[in-house]
Length: 387
Length: 102
Ligand SMILES: [Fe+2]
Ligand SMILES: [Fe+2]
Image (tube, rainbow over all chains, first blue to last red):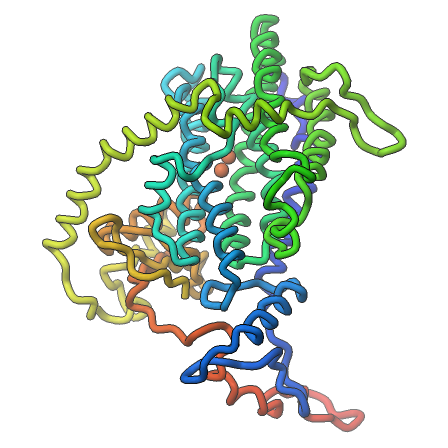
């Protein structure tokens, strides 16, 4: 492969990363309170608390004002039950997708074509586990327990994204999956960095920064194949043929048929319609496909000068519904594997808990800032490692 | 702080809050939370979860249950005493023309 020809970044990727950075900066500065003026108190709404019965209308008005001002709701704020339920459903579904989503690529870890590709893929799969953990932690700030969310996943009461139920038939599928579905995830998730719920927005900033490595390594893997032998090029094209529509379906049903979209947008949990995001993804992807020399499997895909967007054939939403309901090519396999992994890990969790119970000491150590207390790592050693 | 009700100890490990010092000269900053059976494993999980890309040179983990927080939300009257003392900000004082280094 000729490194000189390698594009620095897939077109469109830099823009998305800049949006993540901007959202991150906004999070860091959003809650800076303005200094009080000589006359005002700087406090919005009616304070409530200790001893006084909270007045629901006042609390709701304050909640709505925070949303309208584009500020963040934090875990201990009052929030409507439906807002809490919507967030739990969405964040749990997202967390489940991260951890079940490790499976299609994990299939190929032991069969990667080189040690370099193997270590990169392993790092990506580890990141997905991390994303699951950030998101379960964000969900827990809403008063639910991770163990209950995992039960809901294992019992099929909560879902994960439909694309995970498709198989990775060849090595090229790992590249196509990362380029297309991680790419679609980024387009979906970048606006979530500005979601109205603070812990979710903060988790999404971390997730998006890491997703861009996933996206990039997928593109790089396909680039290597499309600059290889004719058989490798064909393998890459066939993988893209398989993953194009599962990726487009990730944005969900069209806006008019989406049950939760309207309310989620009003609460600024979600900021764009499914259709707007799907269009944005297609617009970003087509020039990348051209660079790779690969063709998305859509005969009607073409630039529309009037709209300033690509026209494309939407995914088969009936198929999406069927796969979400459990009737995709790998649903049973994915869920069975998840349950087995959880059950087979039970002895490790129990042993660690038993060990902790045996060695439990009261938390009366010195201030961790003062000295090397037990629960800190050695900075000097970390500096060495970084050097 | 991020505080769900204490997890059922039989079903999940306790919750810890993680603080990361990004580099020398900076204070530890809250990075997120995780579950772990004890402080030792909490540090290991924190390293694997929050510093996979060299984001830190030092970590603190604190049992979430050990944190005492103001309550019940982010507009607590607890903070009212600061609301009527604008003179604590230097910009409160008008300066005459020509006053420098002040
Ligand atoms: Fe992810
Ligand atoms: Fe990813």
